[in-house]
Length: 97
Image (cartoon, rainbow, N blue to C red; front, side, top):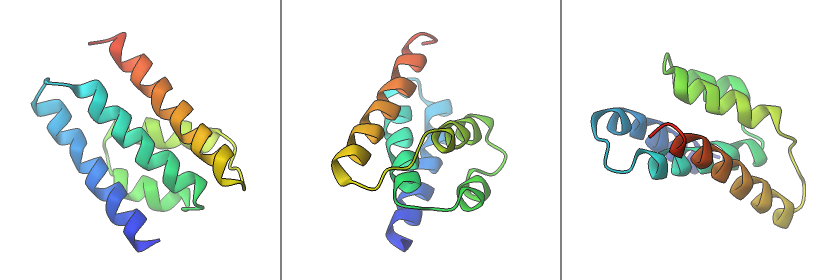
């Protein structure tokens, strides 16, 4: 679980880079959404992710959306949920950039 938390912290740190550079913000958000939903599917506590998200409203919204999705027990279904969630975030992003 510590590796996952470190990965999430790194992904959340990307949001500063997303705001600073507009190279490919949607791909960065896709990666962030993948990390957040992976944590959700692996049983990470929502308060932990919200604490890591801090005051960043974009990251907080992604965490909230991830926890509105169901948590699955089988790996194949978890992977599908992770991919679907990240692709939804990406699709929403490309509408705005």
